[in-house]
Image (cartoon, rainbow, N blue to C red; front, side, top):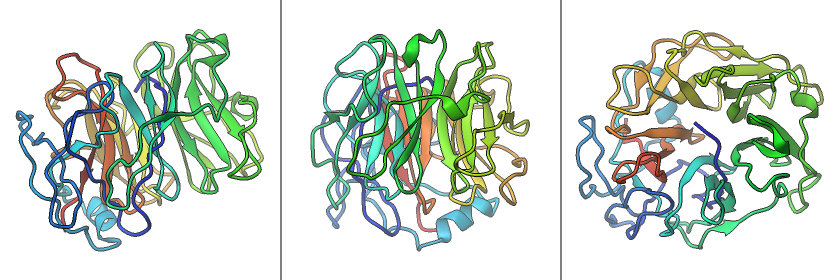
Length: 352
């Protein structure tokens, strides 16, 4: 989806990842409300957006997390996963758009885009308690430096496992169309270097708009969306022989391409499962979230399926799959009067 500024959120610790929507006002530009709490102190997803795109209702209590490893097995089994009811993470009560979420490698920080203080999106962050509820107010971050031009928008970012290298989407530099940028730091307590596009020359094709990057495969694979200059997005993957080398020319995934607009790739750790957004026909309405699987990294993906229980008649996108495959964080404008007034929601898988 189109680039927006990011915010950081602290998530749950190691083990099965679970996201706990909180009660209260919807955050960002229209995130949906949270659900009621269960007896463990976590908050259940707040709105029912089931397969029929129904009007939001109070959600059921959160069920126990799925056993470790079982969630990815279910994604790959060919049987559609079963999810609990989704709900808003309630990041902020401010009237602003929130989208393009990204999880840090340890899943204790969530980055997302927001236009809370600017006409264009900027990077922010928030922290979560051990129970999975937001425990701080959003804080704007200039870790990657301000845009060269104030009207430029920052977009989704992706980072390596050590959190020392970041690749992100941005309109900075006065470019007429968005591109991908890279920044590095020598230690996590240090500032990032000035962003550049040195190793991204083959990926940033002139006249195209790039967005939604994700690093994978020991940082040797880069997934992203490009509109090829015709305003319809397609999902690509670029490769490089080692982390010091430049990225090669990206190649589109024919098996995922609907020719109607496909973006927001999010890969499992082994790259066997991909989640993405699409405007293809057959969805519930607007942009929906889909998934596909494959036998191994490097091959084409199999048939595309909608993520069950995660779509509505409004717009859903920007999916992020947790490391264990048990949770999805995504953006939606469901429940909002205005289209594209996004908030960050989450959904957890039921026990397989």
